[in-house]
Amino acid sequence: MMLLVVTIISAFLTASCQSPLRHWALLPNILIVEVDGSLAQQPLSCLGSPEDVLRTDNISQDIFWKKNGVEEAQRGNLYSVQLEESLGGGKYTCHNKDGSLLNHTVVLIQEDETKKKKILVKNDQDDYLKCTAQNYSGEFHCSWTWHSSRVGKVAFIKVRRALDGIHTQCSVDASGQHWMCSGQSNFSCSLDSSGHGISCQDEQHCPYAEESKQIHITVYVRTEHFLVENYSKYFFLSEIVKPDKVRISKVNKTMIEWSYPSSWSSPHSYFPLTFQIAQLRRGCKRCDNPCTDSKARKTLTVHSTDMCQFEIKHKAKTLCIRAKDALCNSQWSEWNHFRLRDKKKNKKNRHKKNKKQE
Image (cartoon, rainbow, N blue to C red; front, side, top):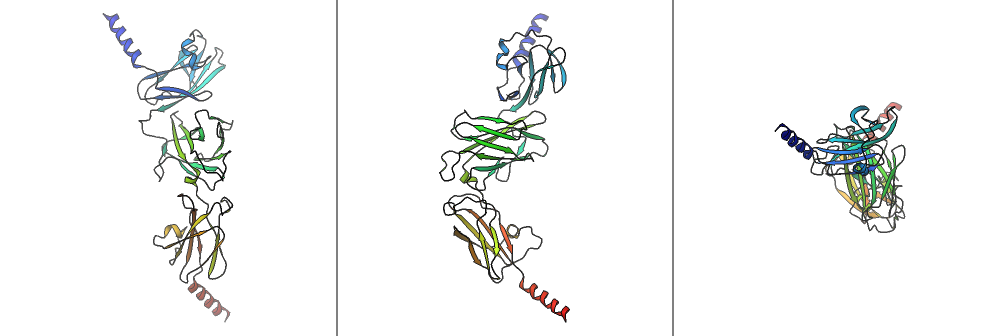
C-alpha cells in the first residue's frame, strides 16, 4: 500500500513539473524561457546544445554546476532548471572536476502575454516606446522610461522593415552598445549612454522615395533578477518626424525673421514645412518657455519653403514659432521664442541714465 502511495505521489510530481511554454536562444549562451506561472523544468546541457538533451547520456558525473556563482547539488552533463512563477532565471555555469569552466548559459524568464508589463512604464502617448526623427535621412531615435522600482538594461535589439520575413539577423559588438541588423533591410543602432534610448539608421533608406513598409523595432529589456520583456513599435518615418526648433532672429525694431532648422531635409521645396506663429502680449519672467506656459494665444499658420519675415505687433512682448511637415500629419516641433524688449522699460532706463548724467 505504501509503495502504491509513493508511486502515485511520484507520478503527480512528474506531471506537475512540465516543460515551459517555449524557449529560444536570444544570443549565443543566452536562453529565453517563456512561462505561464505553473511549475516547469528547463534542461540545460553542458557539453551539447539544449536540443540534444534528450539524446545525451547523463554519465559525466565529474561535471558540477553553479547558479549565479553558488555551487548546486546537481551533477552531470545535464542540469534541470526549476521554474516557478517568474523564478528560475540566472547565470548557470558548468565546471570540470578541477573547477575549470566548461560552458555557461544565462537563462532569462519571460512571462506569457497575459501578464502585466513590469519593467517599463507607459509614456504620455499611452505607449512604452517613443520614437522620433529629425528629418527624412533614415535616422530615428526611440526612448523609454524604466519603472522606478526596477533596475534594468537592454538585452537585445531587433529592427527591420515590416514584411521583410523572419530572416533578419541581429548582432551586438563586444561593448554591448552597438547593434547591426541585416536581411532585406539593414539597420545600425547605438544605445544611449544613459540606457534610456537608442538611435538607429536605416542604411538603405532613400529620403526621396515613398516608404512602402513600416519600420518594426523590438527592444528586449531585462532586470537584475533575470526577468525579460520585449516591447515593439511599428511606424513610418513620416509618422514620427519632428523638426528641430525653428531659428529666429531680429531684422529691426518691427521685423523678425525665421528659417528652417539646419537639421531639416533639403531641398526645402521637396520637404516643405508649415509654421505656426503666436504673439504674446503678456510677459512671463519666470517661464523657461513662455510659449508652452502661456495658455491663451491666437496663432497664425504660414506655408513657406524659404526664410520668412514677420512684422511684430506693437503690443507683443514675445513671439513664438514652431514647425511641422507640411505634407504629413506628424508632430509639431518644440516652440522657439523671441523675447521683445519692453518699450516702457526702455524709456524708464533712458530716463534714469539721463538723470545720472545731469
